[in-house]
Structure formats: C-alpha cells, structure tokens
Amino acid sequence: MSAAPVNIQLDKSPAQFEPGELLSFEFRLAPTPAGEPTALEVSILWYTEGKGDEEISVHFFDRVTSDTGSLRVGQVHRYSVALPNTPLSYDGVIVKIRWCVRVRVFVGRGRDFVTEEHFRLGEVPAAKPVAS
Amino acid sequence: MDRLVKRFFGKKRGDHNMRSDRVGGAWWAVFSALFLGAGCLMLANLLQNVLIPEWRANNQFRPATCRVIETRVQEKLDEEGRTVFRPDVRVRYQVEGASYDRWTYDATRMFTSNREQNLAIVARFKPDDELPCWYDPIDPEQVVLIRGYSWYAWLFLILPVPFIAIGGGGLVYAWLNWGKSEEQRSVLAQRVARQPLDRESTAMRQQFPYVPSYVDLMNSTGTQLAYRLPNEPVGWSVLGLSMASLIWLGVTSTFVTMAVGGFRRGEPDWFLTLFATLSLGGGVALIVATVRRFMVTTGIGPTLVEIDRHPLHPGESCALYLNQSGRLHVNQLRVLLVCEEEAHFQQGTNLRIETLRVHETVLLERGQCEITSDTPLEHRATLTIPAGAMHSFEGEHNKVNWRLIVEGDVPHWPNFRRTYSLIVQPVAGAGVPT
Image (cartoon, rainbow over all chains, first blue to last red; front, side, top):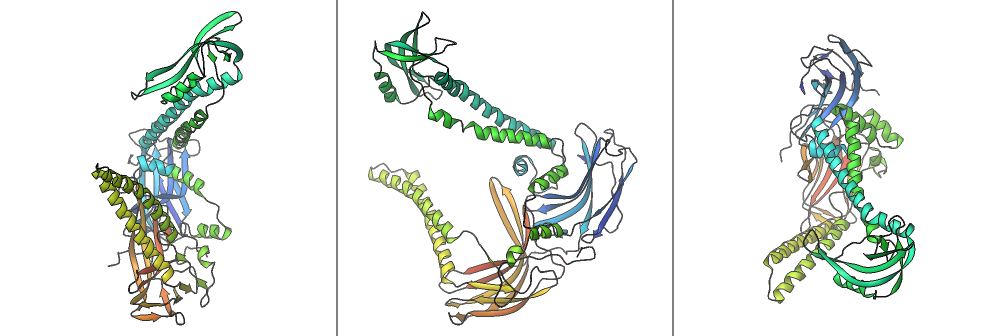
C-alpha cells in the first residue's frame, strides 16, 4: 500500500454533510511508476478508531475493471451517492467514528494504492469524559 | 471466520487500517492448510490401520478352520517409552491346498497398555484347539481369529473432524477472500451478517443503520406514562453466581481433601496447600458476591421506570416516572441520565470491555428517606437529551449507550444499581428522509 495515484475532490467544502445528503466527488487516475491500473475500487465507508477493535462498514462500493469501465490514465471518475442517516461522525473519547471516501487502485501483482478523503456526517460535537 | 482471521493476523487497535492484507491472507491459508493436512493424515491413518482392515475382515474375509500352535503376549516400547502389549496366537490353516502358519489375533493388531487384559485373551486359546478363522482371499496370509468393530476406533473418527472442518473452512475462506480488499471483504461480510429481523426492526435499521432497535423497549405499557422500561440485566444473575459458586467449591473441595490427606500422612504438599487455599479464597469471594446479589435482588423492591415517548432525539424532553417500592430506609437515592461509550477489545486471549461516561445528568438526588410497602417512593421528572448529542450506536466492537440509572445507598445492605436502556435517534435534519 503506497500513496495513491488519485486525488479525490469532494464537490462540497467544508466536507460537512447532513444525514441523507447527496455526496458528490470525482477523481482522476494519474500515472504510477508501478504500471497500468488493473482495477480500482471506490468505497464510501465508516470505520471506528479508539480503544475497541476496529470495525468498518461500507455504505457504497464500486469495483471498476477494464471489463466494466475505463481505467485510462487521466480518466475522470465521478460519483454521487446519497449518504445514510447514521451513524454520524463522532469524536468520542474511546469510540470514534470516521467517514471517508476511499479509492483503492490495483496495479497488478497484488500491489495497490489507497487514498482517502475524509468528511463529516452530521454535527455531533466532540465528547468529553464526565469528571468522576 | 473474518473475526478469527483478524484476531490472529489483522490489525486490531491503534493505526487506521487501509491495507489489503495479502500477507495475513497467505498466513491464514498456510495455517488452514496445515490444519487440513493434519486432519487428513489422522483420518488416513485411522482408515488404513483400523477402519478398513476391520471392515474387510467383517465383509470380505472368507471362513476357514485353523489349529492353535502356541500363544504369547507380544511386548514393545511405544514412542513415549512405555511398554505396550498385544495378544498373539500362532495358527496353522489351509487355503485351497496351501498351508499357512501365522501369528495373528484381530484385524487391527493394535498394542494396548493393559498386560493383564492381554494375558486373559491369550489364555482363552490352547495349543491344538481347532478354531474358526477368516482369511483374506486376496492375500491368504492375512488371517484373523475374531471379527467385529472396535467402538473406540469409530469414536476416534471425531478427532480429525475439527481439524478438517477448521482447515477446510479456512482454505475456502482464504480462497473466497484472496486478493480482495478490506472494503470488498466488508461488503461480503455485511451481506452474510444480515440477520432476519421483524418487519418493524428491519425498517428502523434501514432508516437508521447501527442504531439499536427500540421495539423491545416498547413492549410493556406503563401505568402512569406510555412505556415501562425493562430493567437491564447487570452482570451475573443470582442463579448463575450460585451455579458458579457450587462448581468452584466442588472443584476446590477435591484440592482441599488432597491437601489435608497429605498432612495426615505426614507428607504435606505445600504447593497444593497454597493452591487449595487460594482456590478456597476465590470460592468464599464468589459466595459473598452471590449473597450480595441475592440481598439486592430480593431485599429491595422493584424499581419501576416509565417514560412517555420512545425513541428520544437530541434536544427533546420527555416525562419520567419513577416508583421505588419495598420496605427500606434509604441513605441516598439517585436517578441519572447517562451516555456511555463502550469499547470491546481483545487483550491476549481475553475479551475486554471498557466503558467511559461522556454525559451525566442527575434527574433525582434524594437524601434520607423511608420507603414502606404502603408508601413507595414516587418521583416525576423531565429528562432532556442534550441538543447535538450523539445518537445510540451499536457496532460489533464499539457502542454508544444512553441509559437511565437508578442507584441507591441502603444502610447495612449492599448498594443497588438498576439500569434502563434508552434509544436516542438523530434529529431528522435537512437531509434525513421523514
């Protein structure tokens, strides 16, 4: 896993979305020294951080191969996806929920490049521990 | 399976995971292949040495008559250096005009550790006895004096089963997930994990994914307000603790008996004595916990908590009714609205759960008061979920729980604490479909 040959651009800035809102973004495939892309995967997902074992849940997933779409360098890939209502982004103390768009580009022989663009779903303020 | 793979090879906590984890998948495949290979070897060994010879002796061997020449109990050392034995009977028999002279007994020719049992077997055969025997038509040199099946051999068939199941399942899993990214694996796992729920719960999960269903919290109608909240079970029940105490003390009594026996013989085993003492201490602690739980469960009357609406939303208020019955003097009684984060994680081989309170509102704080059977403590309040608060969340390893907690300090009695789940859904914002 190395730096990805894509730059994800969300249509909205700051990247703050309401539950159920449409998330639109695009990215362009750049050349890589590792070779031509053989497939790419686009995911909109949340994952947890913090003390608990990490979990991940994919809300949207699309896999593009040369059979199902274009993988030409310079090709712009555009997506618009309605976000779910929950779970909202959360900056807890021992539980954190992060949302992101993740693009994984495969370049053969098992090598892949990953890039993420984070966004916030909802406006839940950061939590603080209750003083005991 | 996914959880098992992650447990051994995956990243657990700390750095955010984005890798496709081919190395972990390869290790898992190797591990599974080793398991499968071990299982297949065990099965093959069992088939070759026991099951197939017995089946052939019972179904394919032909009858003949033999004469006993001599008997013996054969001895050898096994892999662990112990002497093992098997009965051996030398017989002479004829097949299609050819004469054969063989040492034999049964089809498996297995050695066992019981010498007396083997001596008893060979004692049944006397030189010059004429006996029925069964020979192999393919190889007449193979002959047996007894037929039948060894029950233990069929029981041993169970041994390779978990190896083959774990190894085979692991290989299928590795094959299905080979080359797949973490995201693709997650999508597949989410499809598999979708459990059939009732229609109402399914609709809730679709509208608010990862927010727990509140259907079960609305089953009971209140007497004062719309819903009576069910009491969350906390820790072990009285019955569970009693069972654990009995089992613990049963095992401990064995150690204590052995330790006392050692002292009586004048050969005290100090290590065993220390172990038995510690075990006894654990047993006493369990009994104390059982008694405390029993006192809290039976000695303090039921706590009824009712609310007028469910689910709740950040910024919303709802009416609360509390009824504490029983016959007790209370030093302090508190009702709290809390939000707690809950993280489940593996630490070594243990599953740990850590909770942290991130919100607390005191809804009632009552000092000294007397509760009698005629005059229960009743309290009405309004509870408000803070605006902008996090909704209830239930992942596999991480949770955000909203709860009402009733806790009491009763003199000369263990403190009690009763908790009631609340479900908080997010406010329907601009983008939330109504």
